[in-house]
Length: 259
Image 1 (tube, helix red, strand yellow):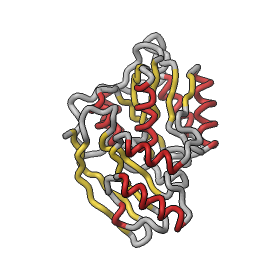
Image 2 (tube, rainbow, N blue to C red):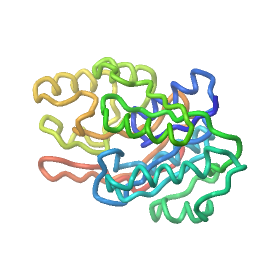
Image 3 (tube, rainbow, N blue to C red):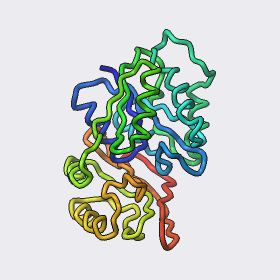
Image 4 (tube, rainbow, N blue to C red):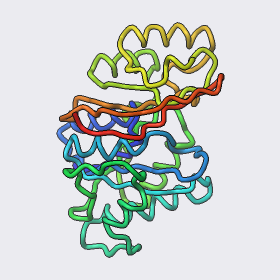
């Protein structure tokens, strides 16, 4: 089974990648949506550039796809980009981009492009797409409809997983997670950029009950980024600046490299 992972660089994408690897599948590429607008109802916005370094660490090809985040066009943009690779080299590309053009268009200025990062190119046909969706019917339905049109099987290994159990397990299994953004009562500046351990998860569970937010961030209360995982060969080191407004905050990751 040759699959692509739709990866934001967060905890659920990391789990989805590991899940596919444990099944012995050929993870042929990580596909990342880079939202150029202010927001998206479908895709994570902060820290997605880290996926390129995650891919380099695991020796997996990467395909960044730039979209504006518009609800009416974002899925079509993803589908067009995927159609260039999922059928293999026998299908001509519907767009004329080159690998170098992708780099220039999708990689933040000033970041070091990993020398060992491979670009996702059309070779053998792809069989399926693995997505880390947990509870968003909106996201899952739109992905499944796109996969049907592309002739791909859709896999959502985390679908309806219990939030408390998921957060405990993913940290216990060796996924090194930080929070690059928080936007809910109960989570203050101290959570930004913190590497989550078992004690942090226990504290997060208490705060989630007190302030009535989703412990796994599924309501948009926080975003996650993964610096190391069982499927990666090297940890990511970052340089960043924390921004806090008094009610919400984010981490500006301005540098990253493999340890």
